[in-house]
Image (tube, rainbow, N blue to C red; front, top):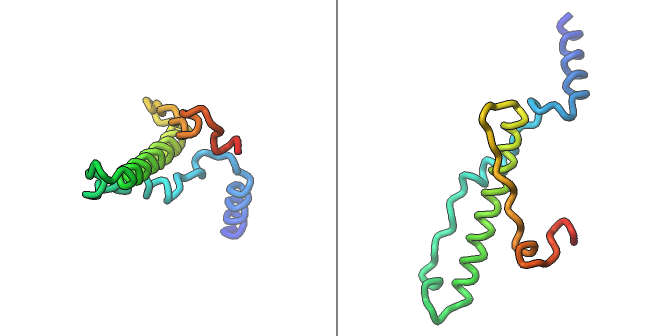
Length: 107
């Protein structure tokens, strides 16, 4: 009897590919939204070193996008579960699309 119940449960879970209750947030998404913001290195504050400032700005934009993307995926997961009052923000455009270039999905 226990084997039959276990087999039934396994078949149910295997057949439920689109079941939102089984679509858990990825551990990488949870880690991304809790990652600390990059610290400003002293060289980035030096007006005579524009490369360091550009490198910091690039790292900060990448961190912001990772947090936004991961937070959006977690928000959509909670919305699919039927949590009341969940309103997910729209995804941020990547830098290339904002500049009028090709997006990552168009390459």
